[in-house]
Image (tube, rainbow, N blue to C red; front, side, top):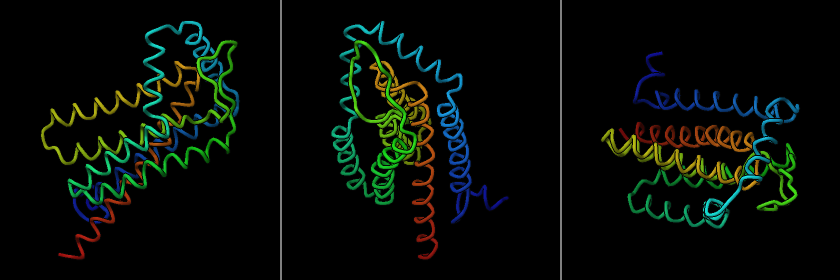
Length: 225
């Protein structure tokens, strides 16, 4: 137990935290998937929320939400990914760069695979704000945003010792994730359960990527001592 809670060591606290996050977020995703596929109460809430937003959509909020979604589309995420990759390279944070390479593109590929597993149709309206032919569950935009901002927050929390900076970083990154998730529900591209499942899926994937890279780094450091 002492070894599992030790901040140092190859299989120390980072591995324990990673496993806890993986199991917790994996459980949340499993429960959401079962509820959605089983047409349980959350699906009724999904439809009610989706139609409420569709009926009450108005400018300038609609344009703002379209902009948020556009920034976090595949093209937008490629640009954000490249900017963060260059910055991490210049900071010589090579292990974090490796984590970025696995987490964001990997999370997006995993999301596409899950969409084809569950094959949930997107919300349907008489007058839709957006029309997409792909599947709905889980949300791809939310997955990409959670992986990207989650990794960014993790890196900055570790390298910035000041607590006010850490709190501000986590708050800002969380706000961006929630904003992207809200934009997808507001625009009628996804149900609430789609974005919640995407966040759970992404946290689980991030836990795997960051824990694996951290373990690799610690193992190499111990070998050089």
